[in-house]
Length: 172
Image 1 (cartoon, rainbow, N blue to C red):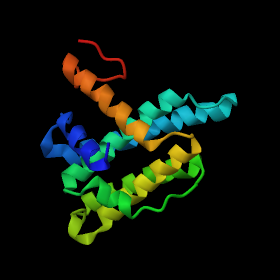
Image 2 (cartoon, helix red, strand yellow):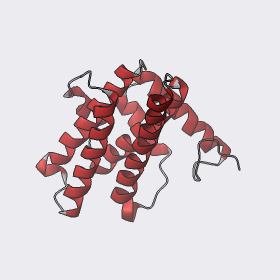
Image 3 (cartoon, helix red, strand yellow):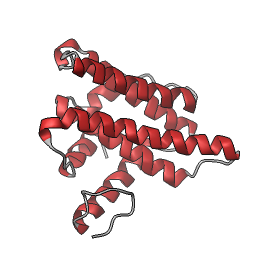
């Protein structure tokens, strides 16, 4: 699946109020990254390896928000991906910097400078993608697996009529 195909499919599962889309998406991304931080913190505390399937699911949720931010700003996800530098930053560094870049986009939004003309928002999204891919490297996860499993999970929820709601295991 290409990143643009993923972007199109995420938009088919997007249900949120458009009048506050930026706030919703930025808070959602920060929340998902917070969940990843918490799970990673527990691996440090307990000296245990990460639960790979759990991390794939959480990274997929974070990617959904990145994809929807791209849709909102009318940016192709593949365009952002083309210019990232695949780095091998630590998981700690990557997680903190995803939160930092998300906050910087929120700051641009609050200052009414988040429109694409400035290029700042695109650059922040590029950095977020770079750090997500760095996490994939750290956790030995194929980024394509994240996209594929995330779309499968969302399509299943959509088919069962539980796309809205909360929690990973939703039932009508």
